[in-house]
Image 1 (cartoon, one colour):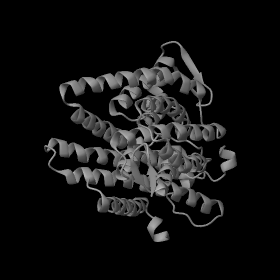
Image 2 (cartoon, one colour):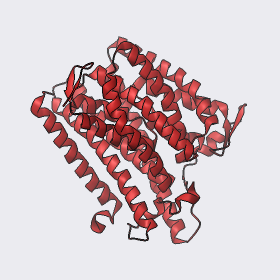
Image 3 (tube, chains in turn yellow, orange):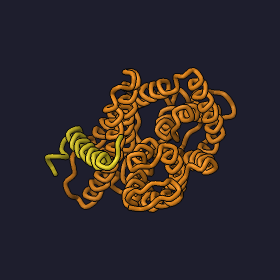
Image 4 (spheres, rainbow over the protein chains, first blue to last red):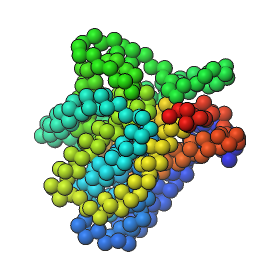
Length: 36
Length: 360
C-alpha cells in the first residue's frame, strides 16, 4: 500500500489500470451476448 | 436478470444499482450529473440509445435533489449565485439546441459536436490541472512552513479580473464571499448553457470550473451551487423525455436506489478535502472525457471504418466511472487514516481537512 501510494502519479496510474481492466471485463461480458 | 418491460430489455438490476451508486459518488463530489458516463453504460447494458438518455436524465434530476440537500446542510450552496444563473442557463441551453439544429441542417452535427467536446474539455483539463498543481504546491509549502491552512487555495488571477467588471447591478453573494457584477453571473450561465445545450450534457463539468475561475467562488461552493442548476436542468430534461416516452421508470428507480446512497457519500466526502482535491478529480474526469470523445471523432474523420475506436471509447468512459470512484474512496480512506494519526502519503496530507467539524 505504501509503495503504491507514495507517488501521486504512480498511484493515479495504478488506479487507472485497475479501472480500465474492470471496464474492459464488463465490456467483454457484454460482447458475449450482444454485438457492438 | 430483471425484465424492464417499458424498455423491452432484460438486464441485471444490481448493475443499475451499482452504476447509480458509483456515478452518485462522483456527481456529489465534483458537482456533475454524470450523464456522459451513465448513457454509454446503459447502452452497454442493452438499453436503446434514446431510452438510455431518458433514464439518465430522469435519474440525474432525482440524484441532484439528494446531493443538493446534503450540500445545503454542509453550507455549500450560494442561493443568490444559483438563482441568478438559472435564467441565463435555461436561455443558453435553448440557444445551444438551436445551434446544434443549425449544424444538423448542414449535415455536420456529429463532427461539430465531437470537435467542440474535444477542444473544450481538453482546454478545461489543461487549465484546471496546471492551476491545481500550482495550488497543491502552495498548500505543501504552507504545510512545511507550519502556516494555518484554509479550505480553499487557488492560484488563478482570472476571478480578480472578472470581479473588477464595474457594470451594475453588483451582486453580493454572502455564502460564496464574492462581490461581482450580475452580468458576469448571467453571462457564465448563458455561455455554459449554450455549450451544455450544444453538447447535449448537463454542463456540470463546464459550470464548476467557470464558477471557480470566472466568478471566483470556492470549489465547494461551486460544486453545491452547480448541483442546484442540475436539479433545474435535469428536471426539465426529465419532463421532456417523459413526454416523449423515453423513460423506463423501473430502471430509474433501481438507479436511484444506488444513487441515493452514492450521492450522499460523495457530497459528505467533500467535507474531508480541500478545494484542489476536488479540482484534481475534475481535471482527471475532463482528461478521460476528452479521450472518450476523441476516439469516436477519429473514427468519424476516418470515414467510420474504425469501429474498434468506438468500442474503446465505451471502455474509456466506463473506466472513467470506476477510476473517479476509486480515487474519491481513496481520498476518504486517507482522511480516515490521517484523523487516526496513521501513515498517509506525503502528497495527500495538504489536500485533506484534518478537523472536519472546524471546516464545516
